[in-house]
Length: 256
Image 1 (cartoon, rainbow, N blue to C red):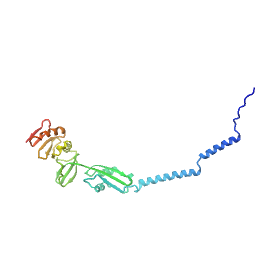
Image 2 (spheres, helix red, strand yellow; image 1 turned 135 degrees about the vertical axis):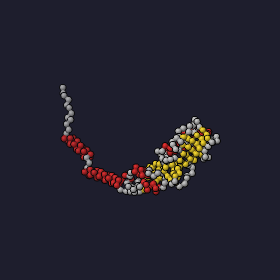
Image 3 (cartoon, rainbow, N blue to C red; image 1 turned 60 degrees about the horizontal axis):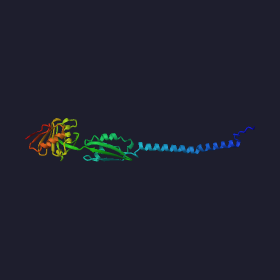
Image 4 (cartoon, helix red, strand yellow; image 1 turned 90 degrees about the vertical axis):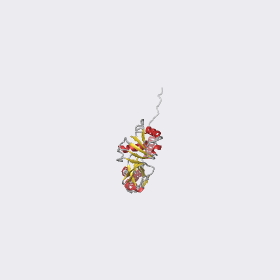
């Protein structure tokens, strides 16, 4: 019985040499050439220098700096007044501009209730101001002082404005209880009643009085129960009288 012969798996010298050459050729194709390596290094260097130059232009030159300051939202103020207080230094790189400081400076203007500062690329700063809206005025020896809904005295004008009620309190100030009560009543009363009010007075937070266009006086009290007081007053005003007391709306009175 004959034993089967196994195939000889050993490579011949020619086969082994061909395989080695194939591996070397593959490695040569994958291995970057010196020229390719140099090009890659130069590319990295050029990109790095470009980024560095861009950062320098952005951070340390006026190329992308402030060239223009736009002011929006002014009414009583002028754009130039806002620019002057904002004190934005021209050519300051926009990316380094301290917008919070500009907001603080513009907010010092009494007429300004709120201010927003934005960068408008490539070279503009936009300052948007929201001015205070007057709800009444106070007469003083130096002129007519405008008062907003917070009780802030924010402007002085020479003549009494039309369409606004006068306010009489000892100390116009947002922290003053009487001032706060007066402006709170003005904000809460119905529009129909507000159109009839030509004056408000208060010595304390609980002693607000309204003077109507026909001269009648309403003792309002504090700023609580506004809706109830307004409903009671609407009924009382149909009856003759000079003074109407709704400070206790469940027990209103009329005096001649």
